[in-house]
Image (cartoon, rainbow, N blue to C red; front, side, top):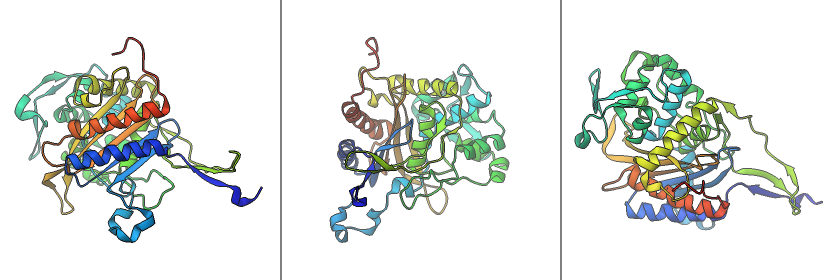
Length: 365
C-alpha cells in the first residue's frame, strides 16, 4: 500500500451541513441578523455532524472576501449564553442536593440583589408567578426562580462547579484558534452577590458555542464531558483505519439520575414552554431557549443588541444528539423562541431523515 492511498476522513455529514447552512442563511435574512452558527454533535462520542457559520467565504476565491470571515467563530468568539445555561445550573443544584425536582421557589417576577434589580423577561406582562418548581422555572425561563435556586448554594461551591464544567478551559477540538471561556475571579464571585445571581441565568461569564454544545452534551449522555471533534482518522481506499487520534477519556460531571431528570424537564420546555416552535410530532425533543443581552467590550451591555439561541436534545428517551443554534443580533421582535427554536427544528427534521431516526413511540403525539 502506498502512503498516498490514505484519505483523511472527517465526521461532518455534508448533507446535514448543507441543510443546516441553508436554514441558517434563511433565518439570518429573515431577521436581518449579523451572523449565526449551528452545531450538531453526537453526544456519545463528541463527533460533530455539522459545524456551520454564516456568513462564510469560498476558499477557492478567498481573496474576494473580507478576512474577518475566515475565522470559525463557533470556536473562537465568546458570548454570554443566557437562559440556554439554565439547565446546567439546575443539574448542578440537583447534583449537590440543595434542591429536588419537587422543590418550590417563590417567583416574585422581580428581585433586588444589592443595588441591582433582576426581572423576568415577561415581568411586564405576567408579573409574579408565585411558588414554582424547577421544571416550571425552565419552562417559563424564570430568572428570579433561578436566582433563588442558586442562592441556596455557597458562592464558592457554585464557582467550583462552573470550573468543573470546564468553563475556563478549551474543549480541545483539533481546529485552530479555539478560545477558552471566561469567568470572573473566585474572590469576586464570593464577595459580590450579583455575580452568582447573574450566573444563575447565564450572564456575567462567557463561553464559545462549541463549549456550550459540549456541556449540554453531558446532560444528554448521562453526565460525561466528551471531546468535540471533526477528525475520524486516516483510512485507506478499502476503508481500513491506519491512524486515529487519541482523545482524553470522557470526564464524569453529573450522575445519570440528575441528567435524566433535567432532560425530562427540558422536554416540557418544548411541549409546554418557550421552545414550542421546535416541536416535531412523534419525536421527543428536549430544549432550552436563550435571549441574552450582548456584553459591551467597555463593560455593561448594549441596550439594543441581543444574541438569541436554542439548544435541543434528541431523542429524550435515549439521547444521541445535541443541536445548538446561535443567531447574533437579529432585528425586530426577536427571541430564542421565534428565531432559534424554529431553526433547530428544521435542522432536526434533516437529521431525522439522514440518520433515519425512528419516532419515539406509537402513543406519543
